[in-house]
Image (cartoon, rainbow, N blue to C red; front, side):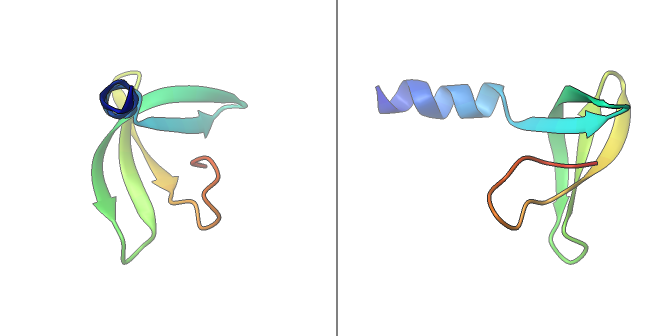
Length: 59
């Protein structure tokens, strides 16, 4: 069961919110100094804030 959960996390790595809706994206890079992740969504790139409290990503 545990390998399926890990596989699911790899296939569904990031949610970013933009234009009032959630976008599913792929994490391209993490910038810990700025607390952002570069996420590719719908052919574009957005910076998502890294969650401090373990919540979702916000753009």
